Image (tube, rainbow, N blue to C red; front, top):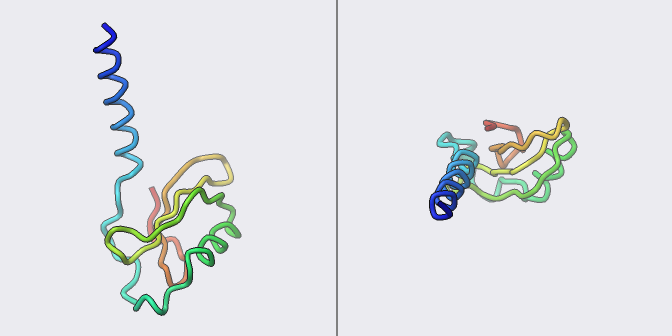
Length: 92
């Protein structure tokens, strides 16, 4: 019984994290990295837009900033930002 419960709990946690951690496969920018704003500047811009930022990083593909945020209503989401402007390109 305990083994079944633990297996189910592990599966549920993995599924939830996988859904949230899905990545955006589009392109946010083709600009050279020296044209990008810093992560801190991008974070400031999305904070000004009303989001609370938990973390921000460069995506694996290397052409977006990926920010884990909470919006004004308390919903958690993932934003993909153009690193030259901090414009939201995609959200999930």
